[in-house]
Length: 303
Image (cartoon, rainbow, N blue to C red; front, side, top):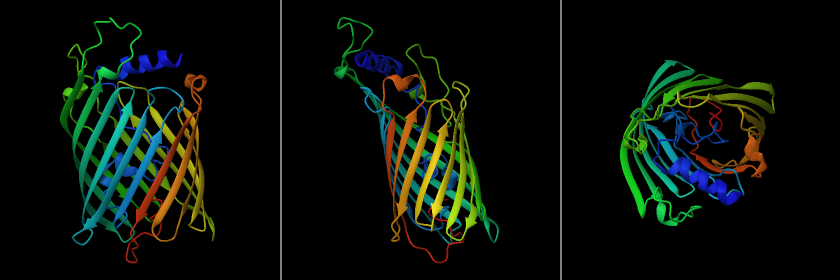
């Protein structure tokens, strides 16, 4: 069964990058730069993040993803620059991307800022046909050797940060380039629109509740939605849970080490038909935020 599933994954994803979508992370509340260039510089200080995701653990050829990003404001914090590197593997398909982002930050009030961001991206897709293990070794539909394609792309986004809440709207990919052509030459739709939002509820002096949501919409796919609620203890420890529409229930836990470092771990419990083949997914996060006494918000770890 697992060999069959691996082959089906190969057929589904290897013809081109047309079927790909932006990776969804269980730690989406910490990895907003992966979805929205407008988030660049929003913490008011240098911030870096590394994520590793192992999806559908136990299934041959299932996705694994490594994502690293960093961003910082400059020039009086009215401008910001960032970069992100993503390496994603599904079966015999490797998708790599390098993003550079810029945001212009507009002070709306003493406690709120609107950031308008743009990103430029170089995408690479490599299909390792030579490693394929098809059911029929004589199948002429399986090409020989490897295929590698490069293409540019662009994204845009807006991010509004208030004293105790945030909201963002973005489209990380705006171009229907050659990576989104199937073998018949038909263009598929890479334009996924993301909405994100969240706020802080102070329950008492030592406890905060952070509800948040991430919604993604693509005309070629069903609506995706992640709903999250996280409890933060003494601004140092957190536990939370998420529901990914029609896919999984997720659990998160983490700690801020007090020196700018934070570590988190997430587990996804699959609720779709894939639960018959997998034990679920898991994710590890490592982040660093440079100390900043003059920043305009006091919840830097989470927004």
